[in-house]
Image (cartoon, rainbow, N blue to C red):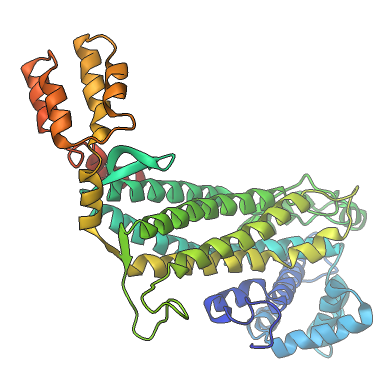
Length: 455
């Protein structure tokens, strides 16, 4: 691994090992074999294709075992055939013919890959790879969302000075700001899950030309739909050329990018809060923060996440824009690009783990946050001028602007100004009792709404 060109297969290999069963070339070849075998079995089960007789249970098990027991060593045999054919899908067909030679299935060998174009096999294989890749990805996303939900609830009542444009603004709570990210991440994950994974099994240009030439009496549309939807759990797309147009892939990759961008926003916010000492980081024995400054505990997990999100989204965005474009009924420029789906997933998952690791190290510096609030009495200019508007006092905004803008404001400054106002006693008392720490609106209740939003 130390000689790997890509860090995904080297430095970070342990973090993405589960993706090797989804996106490696071994996984692609195995999925192709699965599709070819399923196609043969279903052809045999169709009464209107008598020349391809129904396979016995033993024959079906023999074929299923080829998939079940497929190993990297067997995949190398397919690759050896490909070196002669210079065609990866044809190599799979020849491999299966070799595996069934000398058995009762040999007489059906010409029904392997019957009426199919390579893309019939490839597009379904890629869809299955994405399906399994998402099954690996979702638990990492769930762990992130769960961790952030816990922090939002834990810190929902901790007042914090907000900053808009980097300047002191109306207070909020630490938990409420994290809750915003929880809801955003949940929403984007739902968008990812809502994308239908499509597939086609309709021949060289999408019209079942060869199929109907050989067996015009077969309902090929229903036949292929049954395989795609009932057997593989995908959604049939009948409007295709030689290729499934990949629009759903673009939708999926863009949806993952949006999830990643929300996480990037979180990474940068947490990084900034750490730089402001709102958060400290728990030290880990043996870790070094700086090679020359012993005191430093750097926010490297959030920085690593940010960098890996950049790599992930670069790949995913290119996939999304490239895969929708194919000359006429088909060109091959998508093939080499599709081999990088796992790279986008891999860098995403590396980023998720980095953020999760960083969140696990956070410790809240309540005293720093509280002191920041105590030094920002000017933020009460907003509620004061709003109550003044309610009371019909002339030019409230301008009066508060003159009082606070660029000025050093203290508790006494604010109280003295409030005392001069002709306000109803109830309103005046509420303003006099108000502090930057208490001026948080319904921030706590908003955090509690996370549960309702989830249900």
